[in-house]
Structure formats: structure tokens, C-alpha cells
Amino acid sequence: MRIGIPAETRPGETRVAATPETVKKLAAKHQIVVQSGAGLQASIPDEAYAAAGAQIGTAQEAYGCAIVLKVRAPDAEERALMASGTVLIGMLNPFDADNIAAMATAGLSAFALEAVPRITRAQSMDVLSSQANIAGYKAVLVAANTYQRFMPMLMTAAGTVKAARVLIMGVGVAGLQAIATAKRLGAVIEASDVRPPVKEQVESLGAKFLDVPFLTDEEKEIAKGSGGYARAMPADWMRRQAELVHERAKLADIIITTALIPGRAAPVLISEETVKAMKPGSVIVDLAVEQGGNCPLSELGKTVVKHGVYIVGEPNLATLVAADASALYARNVLDFLKLIIDKDDQLLIDREDEIIKASLVCAGNDILRK
Ligand code: NAD
Image (cartoon, rainbow, N blue to C red; front, top):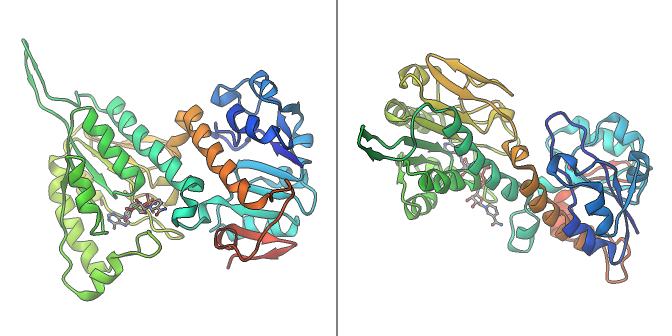
């Protein structure tokens, strides 16, 4: 089969959906076409793909393959390059109904990898985790870069410098990596999440968990989340959380927010009142900025200073670690491909398979995701 890897064209997107490592594995059985320059922003030259067995081609040639591997959803021009029946795999934004409708109209069989269920068998295909892990790491480095003081405690001949206090809001994959990274830099860390099992994970990384007790059975039930993801908490719990966060934010030097609710706007966790109460020169990195932000003052793609606080609204921090983000993403994609290619190296889409059912958003002009 012919498998194409086009260059990503969305502004700011630096990643690529296959690396020489994954191309080499695929090229043993398939013809691989990599668009010239596709890996450049992740420091992968065409020659490296060619050495791994790929043919270097044009966008038309890459999109003309039976299977196309992408990072982000194609735009209208890219969709037009794919024939009806093309299998498209990527982070295709399963909650964007217009985009799915457009892909269905184009006759694509499109797999949105973000919709892969969080079951053990699918762990190696979990693009949300592989990329959130990187974003959590980079968020701390971006914060450290913006912060005008040291992260670790230092005792020098010129006096002692206090360790930075870091508050992490939302302790999923990104939040856990943010705690681990901030810890390595010597910060003192507190963290908050709605899901109770997180407390133990936070403490095992040497951070303090900010507990907002549940006062009703409803709160307790919602906090369990569904499918490993958080649900929107009742207003009263959110108010109590905000009060506690307000007090802790006054003491914090850096706040990293990562809280997301799938398919919904991100919850507001750091209000303008709380920003006003923070110390001048402190830093907020809002990883949820693309979903509306955990702080209403964050601005997409910008670092702004509001009430003396630096608020970083850089979207998609994984793109700043393009080489490793691509390496991990490409391995996720390779594992996903094994699901839809049979032992005779032919395409076989088993619609009864749980992973396929959840991630196939359209096929044969039908929209499969409601
Ligand atoms: P996410 O990116 O959807 O959200 C980030 C965090 O924000 C979550 O921990 C969520 O609980 C939290 N959050 C939401 N609303 C909040 C609020 N009001 N206040 C504070 N925090 C709030 O989460 P994620 O990184 O995708 O991880 C979710 C969970 O799934 C984690 O426990 C992770 O370990 C688990 N997971 C399981 C598998 C698997 O079983 N295969 C794979 C990946 C992740």
C-alpha cells in the first residue's frame, strides 16, 4: 500500500506524523511517500527519510496515497488533494463538527486519534498523553524563562534566594509532568484536581495536594469523571475551590493550569480577582488557552502582563519540542496503523473494534461521530 506523509501547513505546527524510525518499519512492507520538507521543522531532513526507505515527493503525491498520516486536520486545499476513499489518520479534532462534515463530504475515512478510548490496549496510541506529557514539561521551562527569579533555593555568599512556589491546577498527564519538572528545578509545589485518586500521585512526586472536600454525594460522583476524563463540577464546589486557590495563588510565584473537560470550554480556575491578588512578577502559564483558558485574562498565542502578572497563552507547547513530540506522535500513529492493516498488509477496517468505533469519525460520506 502507499502511505503518504504530507508537510503540516497550519501556522505554528512544527511536528510531522512519521519519523525515519517509523518510516523504516513501514517501508519494509509499503511504499512510503514523504512530502519534501515535511520534517524540516522537527530537524528531520529529506535525506533521513530517503535513507529510511521513503520516496520524497510533492504534496500531491503524498496526499494521493491510499493512507495519509497527518498531525493536524487538513484544510480545504489539502482535503481537495485527497481522493474519495482515502484513509486519513491524525489529530482531527473530533469535537469540530464542521471539520468532520467537510471530511465526510470529501469521502474520507478519517480517524481522529484524540478519540481513541483510554483502555490498556490503546495506551501506545494515546496521542493526548504523549503530547500532554511534553506540554507539561515545556510549560515549566517557559514559566522559568519568563519568571525573573530563580526556581531553586540558593545559598550564596551574596545571601539566600528562596525557592519558587509553583501551583499546578489540573493534574492529568500534563500536570503530573509539570510537577516532576518543577521538582527537578527545585521549586516548592502545590497542586489541585477534581479527581480524588490524583492526591496520592501528587504526593508521590513530592508536592502538596490542595484538598477541596466533597460536601454532597453528587459532588463525589461527578468528581470520579468518566472514561478517565473530568466532568464539569457543580458551581458550589467550583466556588469553594476558587476560594482556596485564591489564597494559595497569593503565595505562588508560578501557576501552571492544565484543566480540561473534553468537548467543553475549559473551567475557569484563576479569576481576574485572583490575578489581582498575585505578587507582581509572578507567572501564569495557561495550557488550556486553546479551549478558552483556565484564566479569563490569558490571550491565545501571546504573553500579556495583567495586574503585574505575566500570563503566557502559548497554544500547543508540544510544538516547541518538535523533534521528540514528532517521535512520540509517530510511534502512536504506527501502533494505530497496525489496527487497520491485516497480516497480508492490506487495509482492513473492523468497525466492531472498540478503538476503531471510537476514532472513525467519518467514512463513505457518513458522519459517524455525533
Ligand atoms: P485532561 O487533559 O483531560 O485534563 C487535565 C486535568 O484537569 C485532569 O486531571 C482533570 O481531572 C483536571 N480538571 C478538570 N477540571 C478541573 C477543575 N475544575 N479543577 C482542577 N482540575 C480539573 O486530563 P488527562 O491528562 O487526559 O488525564 C486524565 C486522566 O486519565 C489521568 O488520570 C491520566 O493518568 C488518565 N489516563 C489514563 C490512560 C489509560 O488508562 N490508558 C491514558 C491516559 C491518561
